Each structure stands twice: as structure tokens, then as C-alpha cells.
Length: 167
Image (cartoon, rainbow, N blue to C red; front, side):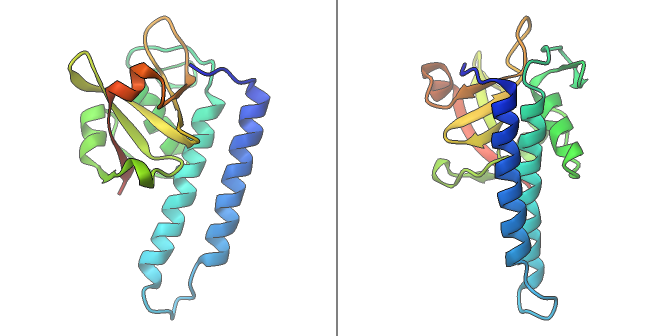
């Protein structure tokens, strides 16, 4: 786990979010442009993922709670669903449902806000949100709190299954 002071995390998240929003606004095609609907959806999805990641970062330090999906406590999929909900996108609640409702993303194509799936104890049972720089935010397990971890740590490097981007 990588610890960062909450203030630095929020500044980082807000900077990333604002950069994403400005770039999305400047690249949104006019309604008469060919292919404007897919391009507009792509720009919106990028901003939503970045906002979801920023929301999740704001939860760092909140205790893990099995079945938790609110600011008094989160489990891993509850944190992901809550974060996307506040970003304006409805996504499923469980890890299995999240797996089925995301488009697979190659490691080389990861974007902020992508959902990361992990194999824990022999089954796909853990998720987190990608932050960029090979780091992610997640609600790890009972007795711990929402935190930031590295995809390069030996544990998560081995446990990583795939990333997904919500449809």
C-alpha cells in the first residue's frame, strides 16, 4: 500500500479531473459532424471515469465494511459503484456484475477510472479503480480502510486479472 496525505491526493485528483474535463470540452464535435455521437460518448465516458476516480480518492481512510456502499464504510465493489454513481453513471453492484458490464481493456490502454479486477483466493473477487501511474484505489479487506495500492506490488501484480471500462 502506498500512503499519501489526503490533501495531496485530492489536489492530484482534481487536477486530473479538470484536465480531462477541459480536454473533453475542447474535443467535443459539433452536432453536424460525422461520427459526433460516438466521439461525444467517448469524451463523456473519459470525464466520468476521472470523476469516479476522484470520488474514490476522497474516500481514502474510510473503513472497510462488508456490504458497505456509502461513506460510513465500503467493500470493494461498493466503493466502485458509489464512485461512479456520484460521477453520474449507474453501474452494477457486485464484482461479477461489474465484470459482465465492462469492456475489457489491455494493460497498455488503461485510463483513469477503469475498473481493475483481481483474483483473490482462487476466484475473481476484488475490484479497484485505476488512478494512473500504475496505482489504484480500493477497499481492501476487513480491518483495513480505503487506500491506494500499486499494480506493481508483488501481491497485486500476481492477482491482477484484467481491467474493464464501463459501457
